[in-house]
Length: 210
Image 1 (cartoon, rainbow, N blue to C red):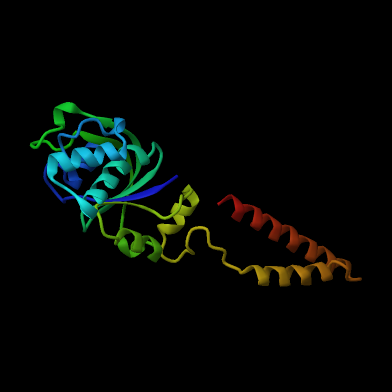
Image 2 (image 1 turned 180 degrees about the vertical axis):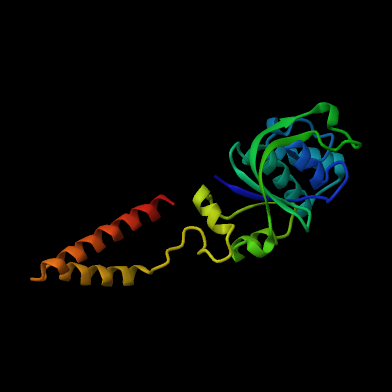
């Protein structure tokens, strides 16, 4: 799954409180129409014509709109923050509400969210904090994450997702010692070495699954 971040207002029609209470998020300028049916080029054309955007600003806006409607997928994760509060959610599909696609409501573009928990910055891993501090309203984490990897990122004292706690050279050195011990004349030592090797193999298999 992918992990996304989104900056929102604290209160108001599209504030964090509204999103949390009603189990959805919204992103996208009004008057564009159903973004699930538009290519990125078509989004750029509509943003340029409707809002006078051009250059890098137009590219950033079009990318954010396209990402919200078509890159995000059902089952991906999102962290939504208003600068003080943060919530982790499980994303649903994009859907378009024509009645809310106007300057007053400004919430025609939506995704359902199953909120999983609130977050505290002090508890998060530094790698995740750096991601959340990046500029822009909507961002995507640099790599896909599994449930286990996300759990690691939510704990400050855990290793970064995908990282190994012991380097490969040390593992190979320890394995060589254990293999030598398995050839010992001492039966108990051979048994202990065999058990240690099997445990190491099990740990490696588990790490590969994460």
